Amino acid sequence: MNERPPRHVARLGMALLALALFACGGTRVPDLEAPKVRIIEITSGADQGTARLRLDNPVRAPMPAAGVEFELRIQDQSLGRFTPPFALTVPALGSETVTVRFAKGAAPAALTEPDSGRLSYALEGEVRLENGSRLDFLQEGWITPTPGKPGSWR
Image (cartoon, rainbow, N blue to C red; front, side, top):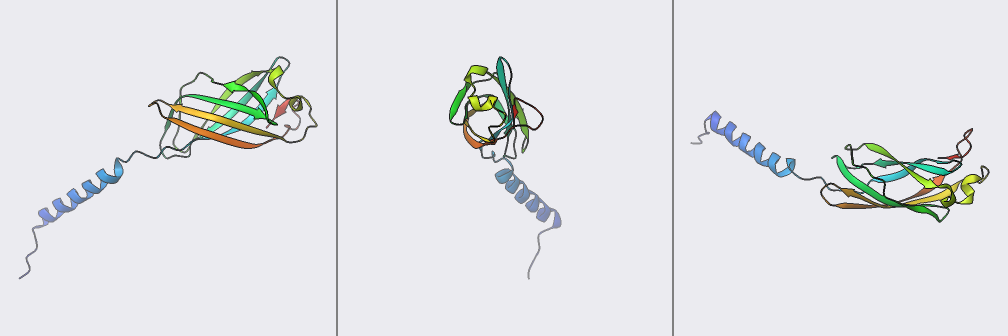
């Protein structure tokens, strides 16, 4: 004869199995992945310029950033190495913006010429996380003059 266990024993067994599966997969720390960093806008004023950057978090967990350090190059000419002071948490699968200022003399002449067309850029650096980890990034792309907004590129 085939005897089945009482219902409460079967339910307890299923609950323990579900708890074990949850513990194995539910507490897993998400893999860290470098953020996607891109230029939102670069403006070139009389004395200085600004660069607004967007950090996109491609991971399903918040990215608690304690700082960022990067070099910005336009047409292979460095605008400088930047370490803006900040601490922010980029939401899971979300984004945040960072603004940095640079000396006008550091900008390539092409940024002051509205008819330059599109210009190449590269952002290379690292995001430092609160736990001491570092995520390296390299983003290359193009910027073009913003229509109707002299001295602005996007």
